[in-house]
Length: 278
Image 1 (cartoon, rainbow, N blue to C red):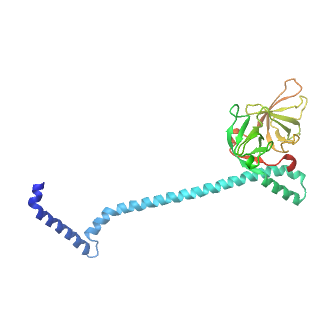
Image 2 (image 1 turned 90 degrees about the vertical axis):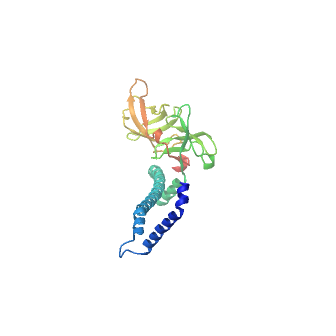
Image 3 (image 1 turned 120 degrees about the horizontal axis):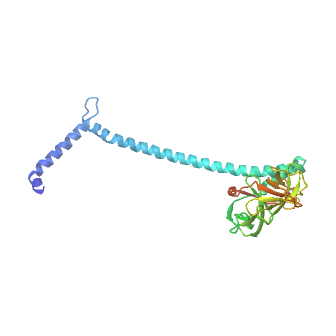
């Protein structure tokens, strides 16, 4: 190859210069109304590439546009969910409390009090020994959390109450399914009064309903009575799942709580005592 180049170097350089000159002439001299050869060659070679680049850029642009639209919709959806959460809590508490208020001013004062005393919280831990007993929420004394504050799920059903310990940013919630929890409740249909206790297994039982009481039925809804001084009256608790007649003084009644453990992603803390709310 070096020998060939040395012998024909002048000829090769001349040939290259002639080809370049022809290309330049082709660029500068149009073929009538048609594109010159070089322009057509460039077009054929590079137009598919250009089209691909433009299509790719448009695709990327559409992806980004879709991402930002989706992100905006997600943010708006979260805001709507948050607003719905508070409206649900206010509505449930308001329906029970309005029975004690008559004037428009009293109702407006109540609405303001409700709005200021509902705190949004979420579960960040569970009881290691038995998750049906208690959970830990991400609010504590710095948020104004205190013992016996009532906890509701996102639908306004009773979950439990705040118990110790309470740290700066966490607090323990005793669930109504804890076998050491007691709530005064009544049946919505016949107003039969009893004490709701947890069974420690995810369910509850209704105690102190006499065997002779004929006003309790399967499927009856239970609500808080307010007689225990902790839970405000009228909060939905659960429904009677089964009634057994054991021959004892009291009936054996199983209750299915309304709240579901797997759906405790959002909780409401009622930041006011029952006596102050009603």
